Length: 127
Image 1 (cartoon, rainbow, N blue to C red):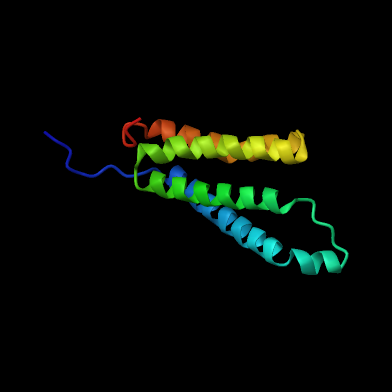
Image 2 (image 1 turned 90 degrees about the horizontal axis):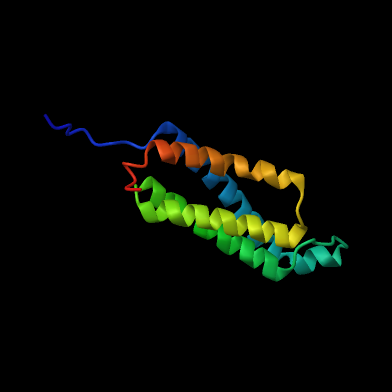
């Protein structure tokens, strides 16, 4: 007897994806505002800790992370591989920009939870 019911992603993957989308949208909007208003902020005496290059790299990584999460939600294995690659690149970028701080360990909570939930559904994602 075959099971004709389609496999679904777990609630954990969906919830973490929603959290990532919210954080990514906030980061993308904030980065765009900082890039467009940098001259105004420097005239007001507000010093920005990041350069234009650093903000552009952050913007690109956030956009790529959003695309990887969309691929995960479409049950594509390339989304999983690209997600973890982008998370590692973002971690390296953060360490290069700010130096290592213990608070960086907190940024690994969501990727670790995502890895646990993806591990439970690896047959569905063809891993």
